[in-house]
Amino acid sequence: MQTHARVVIVGGGCVGAGILYGLAKRGWTDVALLERTQLTAGSTWHAAGLIPSYARNINVGRMINKTIEIYEGLEAETGQPVGWHKCGQLRIANSWDRLDEFKSYMSVVDVQGMRAHLLSPTEARRLCPLLDNKHMLGALYHPDDGHIAPADVTHAMAKGARDLGAKIYLNTEVTGFQRTPSGEWLVATNKGDITCEHVVCATGNYARQTGALLGLDIPAIPILHQYWITEPVPEIIERKKQGRAEMPILRDEGFEAVCARRGMA
Image (cartoon, rainbow, N blue to C red; front, side):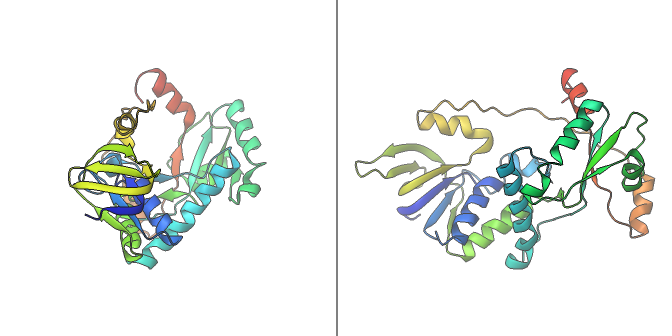
């Protein structure tokens, strides 16, 4: 392993690989990523991979928009499949408060550079014929949203970064950090030390442990999610046979809130 780099990134999930790729694209090729086991071995391997544009913060919205732009060009650039499905996303409003929230959101869409539409219940059911909801008052539709394969996009960004000169070291566990008199960082690993100007921690579920190595108490813990596996849905199978477009991702925050209160989410 090399002994010096301009930047050391700790963590080989989607975030760590994304930072490595982003720095390399901007000319910072003297960068190294250290992964404790294998790429995507942490929370990335079981992430849902949803790409939602909905954000009330303008800068967050622009960041999401840029993310979609990068993902859409990544496969052509690297030759690596990323599993990108631009199927859109539909958010359901079952209360007047939720509908008002969506109406308010429409005032910032153009500034963020997003595309979004406020739909009637009839229009929403036209996009998602399986939607059987008698309480729906309307819906918010983002046509540019979709879902991606988290492991695939991580490996694609890793390849893109390597092609530009960045280095990735697997089975390399960081065991400590020390600030040198010159202001650089000495990063200790099970494969030797590496000195760098900047350290970026992207360890996901292990963020608290990594922070502790730096004397930081990071208030982050993994949370438990549940998911349901259904039998094949005949209507969806028939839709695919007909070559029709994939139905949009469906979100119902009201239902999610009920699940959370009942300990189901």
